[in-house]
Amino acid sequence: MSTGTAQIIVHRVSHAIVNELFDKYIKIPKREEDILHLMAQNFEISGMIRVIGAIDCVHARIKSYGGDDAELWRCRKGFMSINVQCLVNSNLEIMDIVARWPGSTHDSTIFANSRLKYRFDNFECENGIILGDRGYANSRYLVTPLANPETPAEVLFNEAHIRTRCMVERCFGCWGNMFPVSNGRMGTRFQTPERTINVILATAILYNITRRDSRKVPQSIGHYISITQVHSPPCSDDRQRLIDEYFSRLV
Image (cartoon, rainbow, N blue to C red; front, side, top):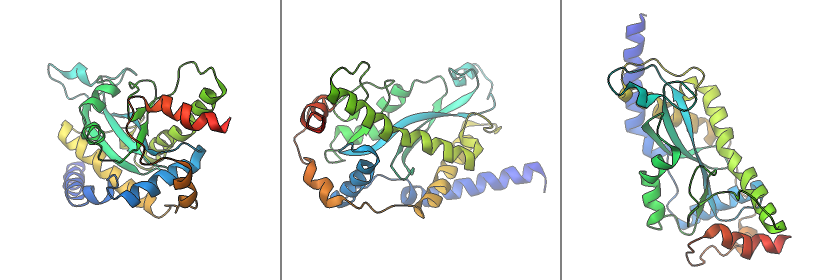
């Protein structure tokens, strides 16, 4: 089989996978019961409550597409890439993915223009939060670690945050080892962004399918509900409320 024929097949199959399976395998739960189970699963990592998932971006290496805007695709690490945003759960599954921005785009810009932000702005995920690094702005639902924790409660919060958020880094490692097109080591050599994006999305779907077999059922859903105010009213700074109302009691 020639290289050209193989590429045609790859693109046709990738397009079919994305069109037919994307909504089935890459999604955030909508039912209240499913959201609570997701929170309980994430809670078991390090005791961080109300967590829907962890967010971060990974650079998928590409070949330069050329043209006047070619340098827009060069990331801070020096190579050409697509900056791919993912929201990940404790089972290392990708629940939300954005794969269309040039490598020079900042992570916070991708999030600010994403459907994920729109959903949280409109309270579609109950009272859940997502964890991000300090590259994002701390907000009502996107909780980042403290730069200089001082009190024991703040130190405990930071430790729980870091240990829980590492699930997104682990996901990128597993996904990249399974499909090197999604990382910065090998990447792709396709001629257009559209073809590259379809392949990245298809590999995310196939990766999620493999993770479904290892999904764990939370053992402490009842205990989890009893220790957290899942339906507490919205707050402008959930990070401080978590520290004051939850982690201070654990010290």
